[in-house]
Length: 221
Image 1 (spheres, rainbow, N blue to C red):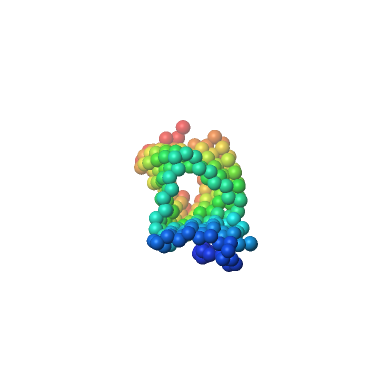
Image 2: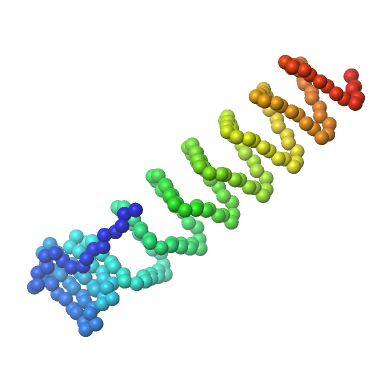
């Protein structure tokens, strides 16, 4: 981030007859310079705080100490060029009403530390284009209530490690098309209660190895 270059008060081509100054015993000074091509107005406080307006209309303000501004009505700012703010300390902005940022170009936030967003109400996010999220560390999602996920197109999950799901309630999965499950290793189905397998059409069971079935009771209808 670029730093501002501090401007020094005083003209470059001040002529004595065109420069009118008032200097007090405490060291305050008011300077009105009418020199050609170097017209200036300069108000200087003995503490080092000053306001200066240069020939081209450029205004320079330097404050030695705190700066306070109170506006009892509306305040509007129009900047037709770039706007830069450099703060060496913390920034706190408190808004009792709504806060809206509208950017016609790109919007980028860079945080070299932690980044936290907290909302006491609903959190809505809408993207007209694609969305990409990259996390170089771990990611955790926790929802105290229900969670609903709707995908209008295809969905692909690629997991490089293990996948574990723990469901304390019911698990219902409805597939309108074909359902294929392929396992490169062993595949086990274990139920602590009853298990039913039904097919509206043909049902085939095939094994390239041994197949064993054990039951305390078999009902063939």
